[in-house]
Length: 184
Picture 1: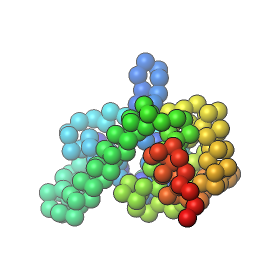
Picture 2: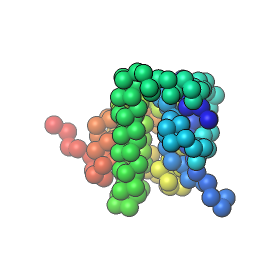
Picture 3: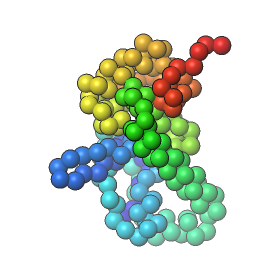
Picture 4: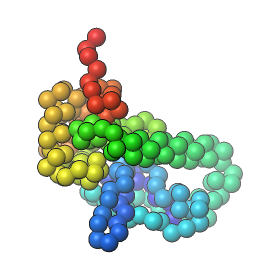
């Protein structure tokens, strides 16, 4: 099982049981995924689905292990990436239990611009409204309502080609606290 680097496009990682599907995370261009399975010597537990035409690079296990064994900055990158993902998943769990739907949508959108996860991410995310729902674990209809509210607050702009984040700090604050910071 190789590690994968997404070079263009985007994908989602999903798990399924008994016919039910849960989106675990989104993957934007410029990011590795699948390294955990290589490190643990096990098959990948989740499915990865391209959300639009994408180019990926498969890194064979032998190459991955060679990098891991001999390149210290590679190991630092992996540590930082896995720490950022762990923070994302813990935050998602807490937000799913504690915050309202609009804040959960804001949190997941803000995570797509997290510099620790996506160092090359720009403020435009090629993500459709129908993809936001599963990412935030809400219905498409409810995701649309949340996106409209976030747009009304001036935090993002809904476009044909995706979403443009207008205020990353405000979006992240809303996603963390369920409130928008007041202008200075």
